[in-house]
Length: 105
Image (cartoon, rainbow, N blue to C red):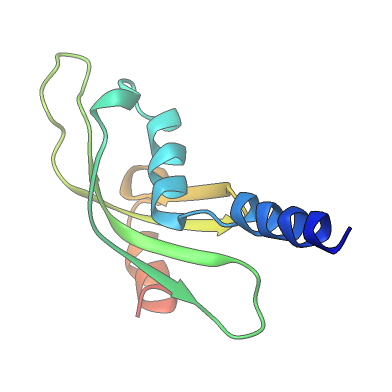
């Protein structure tokens, strides 16, 4: 019986652990025209004490409608478990500067 409980707890821990960078990339891919073309670089994870949300800051590049790359753009993803909400330079404009200083240092 104890062995079953230990195995169950181990499986629960494995399932609940996720990589925030992978989760952020997945969220960005859902927003892009060609989700398979999304590339992420310089992604860093920031976690504040006492807060369950993890912030991932970095840059992404994706294909545009013509198949060309749009160029590297900054993103800030707030992730809780495997769910991430993403702000990009396109979605919040110049406010990305303020948000970057608040969450990505």
